[in-house]
Image (cartoon, rainbow, N blue to C red; front, top):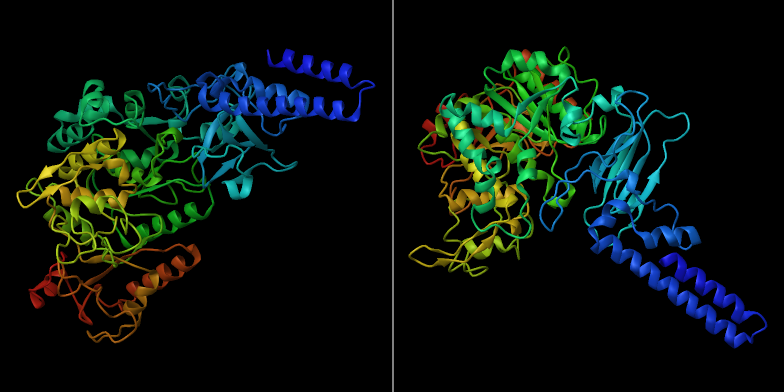
Amino acid sequence: SHWAVVRWAMAAAKRTCWGASLGKTLEVLFAVAALVCCLRLLCWVEMTVMPSHRVHGSRAARLLMRLGLWPSSLATETAAEAAVLVEAGDQQQQRPMLRSKPKAAIGPTASPVWLFCAQQWSDCACQGDVRWGNRGMWVTIRLKDGATSQVVKCDINTLGDHVPGDDRKHCECEVVPGTDFFNSINPGLLPSEIVAKMPTRLVASCDLFKEGAKQGAWGAQQWEATESFCNDELGSTAGSRGPRAMDSAVLRHLMKAWVEPRFMRNYDRMYRDGWVERAFVNYYAGAPYGKHANMTEELINSVHRFSSEPIVVMHFGFSTVESWTAERFPRLVLINVAPMPSLARRSFNFNKLRAMLLSRVRVGVELDSDQFVAPGVDKMFEFTKREITNSYPLPILPPHFLDWSPTDQGPGGEGHKLWDRYCPGGKRKSVGCKWQTLRWGHAHPTWTFWATPFLGRWLRRNFLDETLPERDRGNGVMPALRVLDVIEDEDLLNIATWEEGGTKQWCKYDLPDPSEFQALLSATGAQACYAPFCGDIPGDPRSHPHDIAKLFLTAHHAVTPVVSRRYIEELDRRHRAKTLAPPYLYHQHFYKSAAELKDANPSLTCLA
C-alpha cells in the first residue's frame, strides 16, 4: 500500500542517515522527495482517471495529507459520503443532487448533506458551509460566526484553481434536510423520494407530456418536441449521436419542472389543463438578492406595470428570492426546473430553449433578465400569433443591431465553425453567405406552440451531440457541422433558422440599451423625432436594405437595476399622464400603430 511504502522509505532514510556523510544523507533525502512527488502524481491520476475515486476520494491524497504533504484544505469525500450519480456510459454523467446520503430521518435533526449549488463563474447563496472543487478535491468556505448565510463567488479568481484543467469545478452547499432552507431548494437537485415529501407540484415531465398529447394541437406539438428526450430508444438512435451525448436518464430528468409552492395559487389561476394561453417567459439562476435576481425583479416589476399578461419565471438555480410572493406579484408564476449537470459542459443559456419548451405557453415572448418591458408590449402577442402558425412553425427573432458575419468578432464571429457551413466564401464577399437566409438575429425569440417541435429538435441535437451531415443544395455542398461547435443559444437559434429556411424577423422591439428610450421620453406631441437615438437600426443588403424600424416595447442590456427602475418609473408616469409618444419609430417619425407604420412604409422588411 502507499502507506507501507512511505513508512519503509522513512525508516530506511533514518537508518542510512544516522552517522552517514552529508552526501549520502542528501542522496537519500532526494530519493524520499522523489517518492513523494510520485505519490502526488499518482493522486492526480487516481482523481482524474479512476471513476471510483471521483466519489470515494484519492487514497494517495489521503496518505499525503496524513504526512502533511498535501494541502489539508483539499478535503476528500469518504466512502460514507458516496455520491448519488446517474451513470451515462463511460462519461459517468452526473446529476446535480445529493452528494452524501442523510444518516438520519429527514428533519431538523438530520445529518447535513452536500448539495450542488452553483457552477463555475456563478454565485452560491448558502445558509451553511460551502465547498469549491470537483472530483473529491474541495476547499471549504466556513460560515462565519454569527452569520446565517453567505454568498460565495464560485470561480478560480476568488477561490483559486485547486483542480487545474477541470472545467467542471462547482460549489456545493451544506444543508440539513427538513429545515426551511432545505425545503426552499430547487427540487431538481434532490432525489425523488425526498421531493415526494416536499410541498411542491410537478408541472412538467415526460409522463405529463405524453399524457397531454391528446389535449389538442398544442399537446400534440409538445409531445412531438419532447418525445426524443423521453423515449429511450429514440434518444439513443436519433441522428449522429456523438461522444458527449447526454444519457437517457439525464434527458428525462431535464424535462422536469415544479411550481414553487408559494405560487401555486397563481399557477392554478392562470394555467388551465397545464397550459397558459399567453405569457412572457424568463429563465434565470443566481443568488437570491444578487445582481441577476435584482435584474429579474425589475423585469417582473415592469411586466406588472405595463402588461396584463402573466410572466413565467423558470428558475434553474439553487434557491429563489423569498420576497417574491404571489401577493406582491399576482401575475408571476415561479417554476423550478432541473438544472443541467456540470458534467454536461453546455452553456447555461441553452436553458432558454428549455424554458420555452417546458413552460407550456401557447403564445410566448421570451425575455432575458437584462430586459424590461414598456407600454404597448402586449401587442407582441398579437403579432406572434399572427405570424407563427402551422404553415410557419419557427420562432421569430428580432435582428441584431450588429450584422454579424464571417469577418466579425463576437457571437458566431470570425473563425467560428458555423460559418463554414453557411458562408462557403468566408471573407470573400464575391461568394458571400449564400445559405444564410436572414440577418443575424438577437436571441429574444417569440413563439407559439407550433414552434415547439423546432425547439425540441434543435435542443436534442445539442444534447445528443449530433452532427449535421453534408447537404447538397444543387448550387454547392454545405459541409458537415457538429452541433456542439455552435456554442451558445443565440448561435444555435440562428443556424437552426437558416437550416430550416426561416424568412421572418421582427422590427427591433428589443432596443439595444435603456438609454435608447431617451428618444421616446424626449418626444413631444409632434410626430417627428430629432432627439438622440432617433435614428433607425442600420440595415443590410441581404435582409433589410432600407434599415430597421424601432419598436419601443422592451429594453435590452438593462444590467443596472437602479437605472432600470428609474426608466420604468418615468415610463409609468408619462404613460399614466398620457404624454408618452407612440412606440413605433422609423425614419425619425413616430407612428400611432404598427398598421400605420406599414402603410406609410411599404418597403419595410421587418415585421410589426
